[in-house]
Length: 506
Image (cartoon, rainbow, N blue to C red):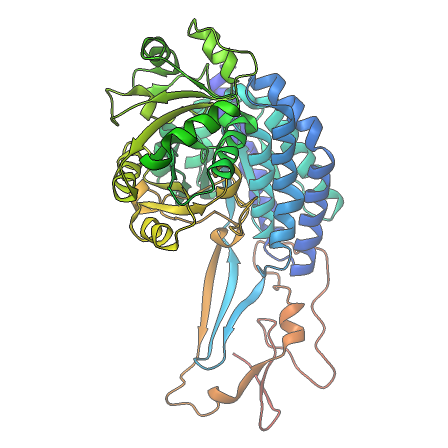
């Protein structure tokens, strides 16, 4: 069979099985869901290093130690952040307004995985899908099929051991563009989580399905005169060394306040950064950027290797290649997103000019994504936060780990929305609550005196397990038991009149 046709058929088969799994997952209780997710997180955490090695061996991108950290972050750390999150039954209540919010799973998730972070993103998307009671079908990048498939297998087998249905986590083995398109367009798919290049994100949005696509980064970092320069440069260099810049939030340009420019240059040199000469810059540009796109051959490569590809002689221990520039746009290829330890370097006379330069950089391929401010002046920080077209404004931290929530209080995520300014539907760090529909139970608080006295039995809500409906086979456990002397309505939520203690059903 033709490889493209084989991929399409495989996609259809996996989605069909995922739909069957979905009919069981949707009836899982919160306890069952959390047992499954905990098992998947622990299995992924145990396999973090092995999966990292597989990813580097297959893609030839990044560093094993960095990918291991990302795998650990997307399993145990992610699970710690969402363990107590309610995703089943009543997840939020407003007693004064008498509105109750009830979570419903969206359905089968089509998860598009990039080559830059293949194992961590697969584990991440599997976990947030299962937490929201959704089955997931993964489409790997053609250059990262084996490591992505193995990550999905680890997640699937752990989920099965914890009681999840067969087919709840699946992955294409024959990865082609046609197979990915079938996963996105198939009528069994409910929602798309697309992480990758501009083309695949555009394909997700044009598929006719609801989609969370994430835009490119091109994140600038501003160093203000009030900053701790040594700390700022340390953050930036460490961020570039981490997996050699493959996270889309990693810094792409540095904008420096003029009074500290020489101090910043000296500190970068102290940390083994190399400032290319004008002649070396001309040799570097056509190698790191091909036409209007980053060159995939330099993505996730160490600075010394990139230099050799350009015919430059730099010390082997070079951490970052620094390119001094005065403009942003096509005439300055290195002002684009490169996803490698190559940084543009701008000097501006004050924070206002620095602010405008950062906006210019974001507009050239990074709208809505990430911006870092290194400063100790609260006014400067707030001016950047209020006026910059980025939805992750990070302060005195590295962009790579800060944006995904590893060094900040942001929700841990490998899918970073860029909002409408970046042509995305969400500006969130995408998580399980982005994969549920919210039903709202609302009462007539103006004309019904009983409504104001209605209460929900919290024990039943916390143990709530949806009833089996048509087409569902249930999740294997019996109905929730009501407390002594109480009754349960058909939705599984106990309602009673606080004054008369009489049961009411909806």
